[in-house]
Length: 220
Image (cartoon, rainbow, N blue to C red):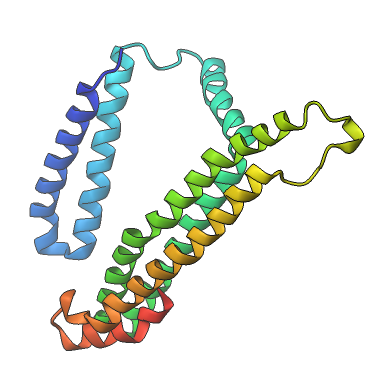
């Protein structure tokens, strides 16, 4: 049976801990205090979830059971979803690297406008990136079915005469995906660039931030 109370309880305790921590630490420590309060709030949520799992006897009782319960999902992930895991890990690593580079450079130079512009562009990235993700998931859904349909169409042919290339149904899916990627990707890129470049004041009225947005929008 699904337990919906435990996550809600953990989220409530985490939010309360974060609020209290911000009130205590931010006035004296500033941004470092806010980061420390957030970290403490996540630890509170983890403890709450672990306590609930222990009460419901969902946790393994021996080291061998821990290894077995942790190893099986990891093996399934790496054997069946290795390409997806690699793609998501690479995207996350790139975003984290860019965020760290922008934050560290802006902090060293004292250029808070560049840091603010970077945060706006990261938000815009997550607004427009799902278009490509949706197209990718659509192709992953329809292409295997098309390949199977093409294979069924060639069942009556001798094995030596069966084509090893994509069949007509599969080629139609690929052509449609490429066309959709060009059209939707082009519109997506134009909007992602045009909004911060042409309407920078829509996101910030600070002239320095707006100038930084116009300067860095083409990279998005």
